[in-house]
Length: 421
Image 1 (cartoon, one colour):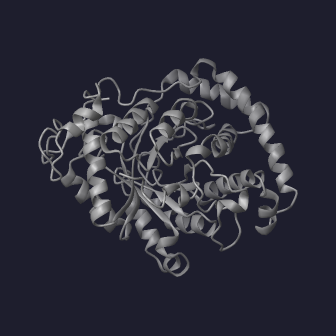
Image 2 (cartoon, helix red, strand yellow; image 1 turned 90 degrees about the horizontal axis):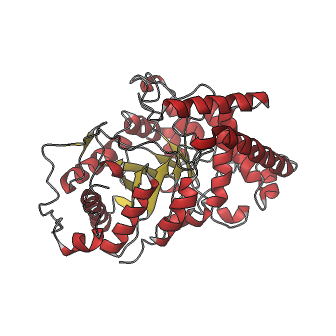
Image 3 (cartoon, helix red, strand yellow; image 1 turned 180 degrees about the vertical axis):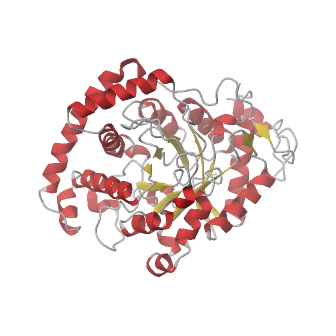
């Protein structure tokens, strides 16, 4: 089968607002957050894509409520922005990748988000289920895409880079069609750049069109105050000694009147723009030209690596956007864009100077982190056992598409990967 046309990389903006923070994992009461104001402010600042999931507690409902307003309908037609959501993960230890549940999950997401379609549907946290289940889910999402159009593009998301690569390669072998997107989180940060060194070559070879880099602060690990503690307590899977090393890195930044999160955020966003460009996109870059739909060509024409950022408050969003726009000011033709956006011509030179400072501080931080560079935590943990919904059809049985775990499609695909990855 051919790749989806037009390719996702021609449309998706390189900056996506994530909504995992609209969740009790990150915040004591997500309903108390100014979520509608955040979404409206983000759109006013040029952000044109949002990432969410049913697993993120009330995030889909909160995002949907923010989008289902007169302000959005008046200024931002639905075709002008992108909604990405996920299927398969129900709770911390419960999963359902069956075709029946996928159809139900998509329908529920559409209702919560007040939209007629999802621009991207990801299989969520694929490392927690079998490779058979992932392939079955991808096939079902593509069937939905081809028969109803309520899903436009199909991808997978998760943490371990190796597993994401193996699954992308497996999907291509099994179906002849590459995945539109593979989203990884916390794998291109100041502490860990495995998504670039190990992920990009294999994902590109597997035909994956776009590889968004989510959680550039490592789910809050790379902050002066440490990992976030929400209503569910300390959920972060990082080891104690890694956290200690990050506190030492924060003290290093303090000595230079910098904050660890500022250095880490700019390092990840700026470096991924180029490192991830080969699997990036040409959508609206949100460079700040008021009320104008922009194109990458205005910043030099090259694809930009796609990043997913999450915030809990307006000031965090504003700070992130200042960093983002300063980064764009340093790109080719960035001076002209800065002027058009009402900033100063000198901002281009300032951006280049700041880039050099961040690279210098980044090297210092990585030296402090030492053995923890490119370290990853186990996902899932050694004692984890995924629960399946009682209604879930075992993957050894035939689905509505005639796809079975013993069919030639599966047999040819796995080549020794039949056990859970």
